[in-house]
Amino acid sequence: VNNSSGLLGFPKYKIANIKDIQNSNCPVYFFAYPLTNEPCFLVDFSKLNGQTDVQFKNPYYGQFRINSNFPNIKGVGPKGAICAFSAICVHLGCQLPAQVLVSSPDVPGLNPSTTILHCPCHGSMYKLDEGGIVVGGPAPRPLPIVLLEYDNTTGDIYAIGTNAPYFSKTRPTSNLIYDPDYSYQIPSNPACTTG
Ligand code: FES
Figure 1 (cartoon, helix red, strand yellow):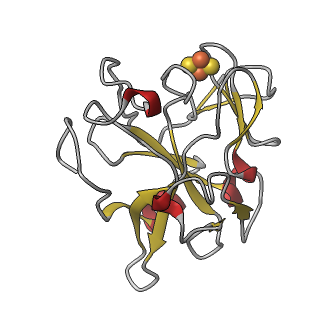
Figure 2 (tube, rainbow, N blue to C red; figure 1 turned 135 degrees about the vertical axis):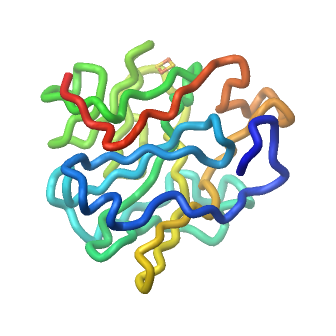
């Protein structure tokens, strides 16, 4: 994962420990995956709006070989409430302000009550508790999910892949999600602000 120019496959990589999430009041925790300059975020739905045992259909199921084992996505952790998404908008690659908690889904940021994440660039809206499906704006497809594994003996949370193409410069541009010419910053944690 210590590579910003390209990978052949998805590594299994420790991205956090459950204590990092539990010790924070913020429902969002940023990490980089699969490359060191690709921002993603964990969201703890139990903190965002009280949901536990989160489960949703994989919006990309059946479309790509890489996610053929994941018809459904389940939250991980003791409450089954932690999921992870890319923080790069699939429309034109703006960084999504998942750390900005907002009171209206019409305002850019993440609305805790609806779980809608609203891109500031052209208004794409993704509903996180339904797997990042598009509920508004020009995004042509759902927000990629980062597949997680949880070790309940150590509390470590691992990223093991994604449910959708998450391509960098070495991959076909027709499937480009990651924009290699855009400079992304991984926000430091705890990441929450209010907008
Ligand atoms: Fe997000 Fe255009 S880049 S809506």
